[in-house]
Amino acid sequence: MSQDSYRPSFNISRVDASVAQPVRLFFASAFLWLMLASILSVITAIQLKDVSFLGGCSLTTYGRLKALEGNLFAYGWVTNALFGLNLWLMSSLTRFEFKNAWLANVGGVVWNLTLTYGAIQIIMGNMNGLSLLEMPKEVAVASFVGFLFAALWPVVAFSRRPTGHVYVSQWYILGSTFVFPIIFALTQLLVLWCPAQGVLQALVHSWFHQNFYLLWFASSAIAAVYYFIPKESGRTVSAYYLSSVGFWTFFLVASWTSPATLLGSPLPLWVQSAGVVAAILMLIPLVILAINFLGTLSWNRGISQSWNNTTLRFVLVAIFALILWGALFATFSTRGLNAVIRFTSFNTGLEHLLTYSFVSFVIFGATYFILPKVTGISWLSSKLVHLHFWSCAIGTVSLLIITLLGGWQQGSGLRADWPSVIFPSVLLLIGHIAFGINAFGMLTAKLSSGHESTHA
Amino acid sequence: MKNIKLIFAGVLFTLSASFIGILLSGRVQLGSLGRAPAEEGGPLFPLREPGLAIQGRQVYISLGCVACHTQQVRPASQGSDIAKGYGPRHSVARDYVLQSSVLLGSQRIGPDLANYGARVSSENEIHAHLRSPKAGSAMPSYDFLYTTGKDGAKVPTEKATALVAYLKSLKIDYSSPEAKLNQ
Image (cartoon, helix red, strand yellow):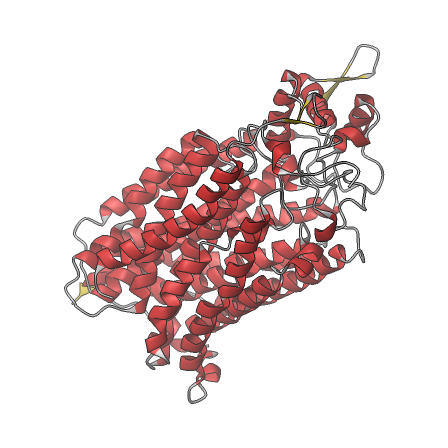
């Protein structure tokens, strides 16, 4: 890997210094939630094989711990990290110096406090029955306010930017920032506050789920990939003229894919068919993204060079994960194949592929680039970086093989039990601990060093 | 694209398109769906849930049972649910019209429960399964839902009683205009 990541302490630019505090808060919160989610992931993996593990108590049923794990991963790890990532990316791209970025800190504190309260409520059993909407409805109001304070700063930076040029990354950041509050508010309203009748609830829920994963998670991650590939490879984006087509088709089609996750359900057939068509049409923006990303990286042996750069190495794995997800999602949304893998661990694998192998890997790569810039301190240990990458890479690949193949076997009647994911879950935990030690080492070193040194 | 208003309008349009195309259109088709008799002049189905079963639904949700169990039987053309004995017919939207929170589920670590109430012979059978699931079952014991009586026998708590009433109420053993039992 590049030694560039392990350079000694250096000054922070004014633009970076203006957002350094909230970015550090968001990343620190994200790392803590990731640790907790990873521990829960190991516990629930063990519970699937040893049903008596932590049994005998309502606080630790598999259902509650799994719901908790999902919420901490989505709202704690990914969302906090995306708050920080989007804020830093937009301020960096616009060269906009924030004067009141402390307001984002307020948003971050509100967001994390409400998440903590919601997590306690889930453990106590005061929860709803729909994934990622388990937290009590009163939590949503505070979360919504927290989101507005935490996440809308990229919009401010874009509106008041001193530079005229606009990058593709900025489209995706703005799109994802606009989408989240709209889908969150509408879903809370139609599922928890004024519930829609019958199976329409499931339809609204799946609409939220897909939009949340694709237009908040993936869109923000795509923005980062569009930034880091040209930045770190030193090349311009290949087939740049396609990027606007990719952006609009991505947003237009992704939102329609939700019924593809409900095939065979009691919903009208035309709704399900619309989802299948959208799932296949998703290949259009994904092919464009692949051309943009891989076309840029593959030029002049760029892929092998990328392997020597910490950020690009994570991003490269993420790009292949996104392409694989698109191909599998489109293929297994066709009715015949979907009938086999529906309700099996195959879907767990697909979700992992998108939210972890793609989105989380982009966040990891971005963190290795951003954290030194907002702390002024280099990464403490290159060995821990290597351990993090290989542990998570082997963990995520083995988890995908186990869940995807296992799910296919379940659906084909070749196995009856749920595939065990203890081994990959432990590997991921080890990788996250290595990442956490390195990251918190930097953040605490920053705290102990005190002052913000800056240069123009 | 440099205009933030254009990006916002475009994103809003894409979201609105799916919201109207999927959710509102679905609401137009299903929003007025009500109960229906299995045969002319017969009782309306689905039956109203007893109060205890409604409480039991909350226990089911609070324990996180939906993480492992679905409540939907797919048509024979889209899966082997009927062949596996999960239900005598596939689930239809009408089956859920009275449910305050619909729990279709997405994973089957355990079996589908849409017609579980019709598959078990009695509430005692459910109590026995909750206390000590059969060997090899993927379900843990829910013994903490029971207390020990003076005579040493297990006594269900209010939560256990409500949960069992709910599970026993889960049935699709009636004909619906959209899915007859003999088809």
